[in-house]
Length: 492
Image 1 (cartoon, helix red, strand yellow):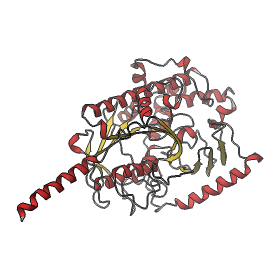
Image 2 (image 1 turned 180 degrees about the vertical axis):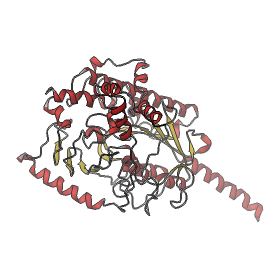
Image 3 (image 1 turned 60 degrees about the vertical axis):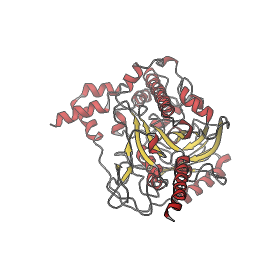
């Protein structure tokens, strides 16, 4: 009897193996601090052939938005698949020793339960780029039970055929502001000429601003070459035909109106999905409104994993998917506490600033080291040399409400609040935002922030290194890492 069962058991085992192998591998490429600044999104001056090629064979989404324009709250929402305000993970670099409230779990644990090996990887110019950066108790690697074990991934860096199926979150950190920017720019094989780049209307046409913008474009092109290396690695390992590649930014570009702000450059990010199994489909461009929590739900659906009821995102390719708005929030960022909310559709952007007394340019210590354009435009403001569109970011207070028609005003230069023609739209979006406020009420009020060392470093530079501080004010990026080393050496 047992001998008769052996062939049947063998067939069952082989069938199980084939089913497991049929599941796609998934790679989530997460570039830091970029808006839709790729040539396939019609960004002028930049050359991103690898991502363009990926978009040409996949799907490019025009209206994908993060739920917070700062790294750790945004990443928290994606790691859980639920809005960061709802899960009380919305305050930057806070609650790092506080376990997630039930029933929330990291989506990587759901992937593990579906049979996936989870990999935390990086392509880093620093030699270290693995990044989780979420606002709840966690460790990079290890088991997860949410009580005594808090590991998010199984292993670092390398994905192998024998891992299959695998999910890899790979960090592309070169576009994050860092002391390496000038070196990367200098070594660029086709370096951008600052005099020839095209600037957004809200940025001053000034040599310092132009140089900073050109360096950003150089980082984008370096990052694109990294994407090409990763896709070549898939080919070399024989994994390309069964690996879905998803490319996003974790939040918008680190510059004026970008990272940290609820304007379009801070919230709108690139999303490109390439699924090699959809051969012959050809390039697609979709204008549906996407939240980054929808990407999490989509990955779970690709993997055949559980889709918990607490998710605030839904799989993008479900027949009934029809998101109309993305609700976004800006709260704590280092020493600057904010309380702003935004609602974005495919046409409209509504922002409510509940702390209008806190200006956009709040003098945040960390940003002082990495925003040459801000320093230079402050000087131009004081000299009365900024246009009204450029001076808006430097006003002493913020408007209590903002309303923009993204279809006719993509740079958000004209606040429509107060215009009779748009009163009805303003009332509707104001009411809907309040409804989202209630829906996303935090599950907990625990608040344990971490004091940023950047405050002490900036104070040290001002007092002890006045010549260096003067160079910063003139628009030179003196480097946070270098300044930190000086400060720590001074303390010893």
